[in-house]
Image 1 (cartoon, rainbow, N blue to C red):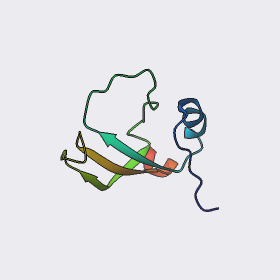
Image 2 (image 1 turned 135 degrees about the vertical axis):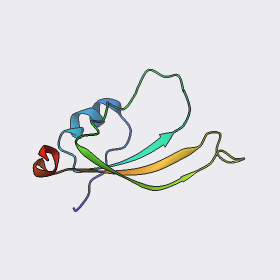
Image 3 (image 1 turned 45 degrees about the vertical axis):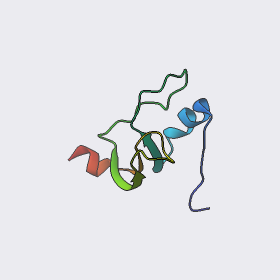
Image 4 (image 1 turned 90 degrees about the vertical axis):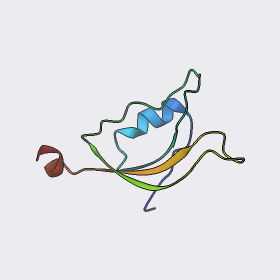
Length: 79
């Protein structure tokens, strides 16, 4: 397969992050309490491309963004 998706399950996401070449992220602009969080993402390793989103409205309690992160090559990271 060209792409495999890992959805949810914090430990599974953390375990597969090192081998991922692309990550699709939904970023919610809110402080939400919880005990499970996605691992920190090193901005020096990823190119971020916004691919959509929604403002807060009657269907969305908080504004959110959809992002695609593509892993930079070693050459791009060193430059």
